[in-house]
Image (tube, rainbow, N blue to C red; front, side):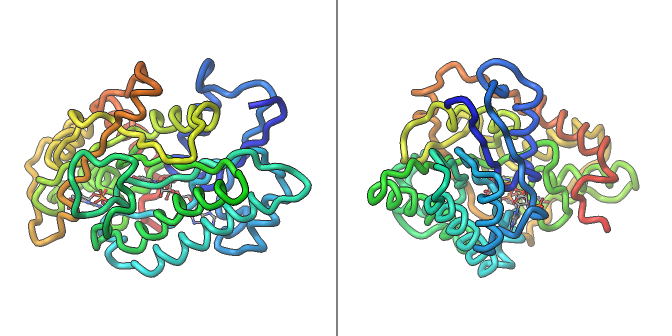
Length: 328
Ligand code: NAP
Ligand code: GDP
C-alpha cells in the first residue's frame, strides 16, 4: 500500500474488528501499523450501514482508499435459526451499500475492499475438505439459510464488479472465530463465548453447566488475533478476487465436547457438566482446507487453542461488567 492510505474497517467494534485494532496498535513488523496508514474503526453509532444515505455519508467523511468490511448481523446457531429473514435482508443491504458506495466514489478512489464470508455458507451436502471453489455448489445448511445466501452474494458481487469495472474487491472465509470482545450472550452467541459465560456462572453460582446438543459436532476454530493478522496480510498482499479460507488445518478440527473441556479447564470449573441433547447440533461438520493459505503463508503460526481459550476467558472475566453478556 502506498503512503496516505485510509483504511476503513466496518464493524470495527465487534470481535474481529477489535482484534484487528489490537494487532494494528500492539504489533510491529509484518502485521503492525505502517507509516502513512490511517485506520478508522467504525461502529453502528457512526451510521446504520443498512441505509444507503448513512453509508454514503460515512464514505464521504473518511474518503477511504481501502476497506475491510466486517459489519454484519452475526449470531450463533440458535439466533440464525430464529431470524432467517433478518439475516438475509440486513446482510444483503449492508453488503450492497458498502460495495456499491466504494465503487461509486467519485472524488477519491477505493483501491481495495476485503469482505468477510464464513465457512458456514458452504453447501450442506458436500465432500470434505471444503475448498474455495465450492461455495456455490449447492444449498447451505438450513440453519444458516438467510446468512449464507446473503454472504454468498458478496463473492458474486466481487466477481461482477471486477469483470465489469476492474474493481479489486475480494473476500476471506474464516472458520468459527473467538476471542476478546466476543458476544458472550447466553442464547444468541456462538458456542465458545456462550459456553464460557455459562461455565463462569456455573462456577460462580453453583448452577449446572449444560452444553447444547450432543457435543459430537466438529469445528475448526480460529483465534480472533490470528485472524486479524491474516486480514492485514490479505489487505496488503493477497491479490486475487477469489476468496481465501483462513483456517487452522484439518488436523486441528475438534469436537464441541473438546471445546467444553478446554473451557472448563480455563475457567477452573470443578463440577460436572451435561449435554442437552434436545437442542440442535446444527451442521455436523464443515471441515475446511487451508491449503491455499499455506501455499501463500507456509510459516504462519496459529496460537495454540488452549492458550487462546485461556486468554479469552481471562479477558471475559476481567471485563465482565462491560462485555456483551446480554445482561442489561
Ligand atoms: P460482531 O462481534 O457481532 O460485530 C459485528 C459488527 O458489525 C459490530 O461492530 C457492529 O456494530 C457492526 N454492525 C452490525 N450491524 C450493523 C449495521 N446495521 N450498521 C453498522 N454496523 C453494524 O461480529 P464479528 O464476529 O466480529 O463478525 C465480523 C465478521 O466476521 C462478520 O462479517 C461475520 O459474518 C464474520 N464471521 C464471523 C465469525 C464468528 O465466528 N464470529 C465466523 C466467520 C465469519 P456495533 O458494535 O455498533 O453493534
Ligand atoms: P455454527 O458453527 O455456525 O453451528 O455456530 P455455533 O458457534 O453456534 O456452534 C454451534 C454448535 O455448538 C452446535 O453443535 C451446538 O449444538 C453447539 N453448542 C453447544 N453449546 C452451545 C451454546 O451454548 N451456544 C451455541 N451457539 N452453540 C452451542
